Image (tube, rainbow, N blue to C red):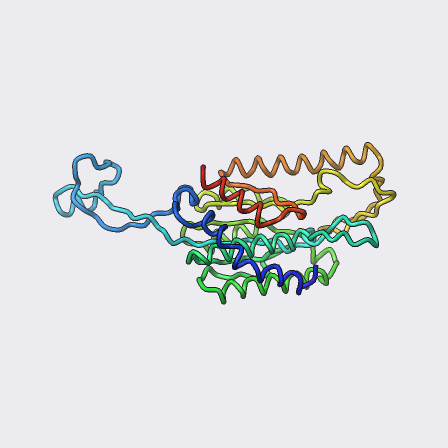
Length: 306
């Protein structure tokens, strides 16, 4: 899909995002931002029934009477999107010489990011983004406003073009999800909703993922392909690892190869889900063949009920 086609889809999202905004951020913040942040408001005299853990011992000692700390719910929170732009997000398993008409993983990821960004902006939330591959390529600090959203998505469209042309040398490849998670943790000072959009073909990210989950509400969106489950039974198929440039010729009609292919992808999926559960993060598998708006709406509708 070229830039004009992607832009034409994104241009309609402010209209389609109305319903999604209600599911993601409107209404009951507590059901969306699990364990959300609270801010100190004031101290007042202790009253019968107050939780002893809320006693402000310093104030109580200073004034010679018991005081308790009062907090208020932090209603305005940032939505921060981490979007993977590494080479594997541009790969597709289309038969050589035949256009499949299927979105590439990055294109589907960008559409999901656009829907979430427009929905958050519609309810007055600050939105930020971080684009990463082997390092952090671009950071947009959380801000409000449609102009800011369009700047983020404009960069996303530029990445779509540059990703196809990027140098194929091994030194320019790789996905450093660990660095992206570390960067987000350092940048975000208050509890935020962090949405990670990636194929999660990376190593060493688990510790930082778990660490980030302790201070923020995490949603992991894994972009996948139907071919992860079932590879087409074509003849000799040339394959290249987009992250390492390693090449091989496969025999997808071979039962042994098809079984190994399915098992490898199933193990990756199961491992990713296990890490998300361990960290207490919500997770969503989004296929390149899915309608992103419909899948996200159902996901946040279910999440809101929990």
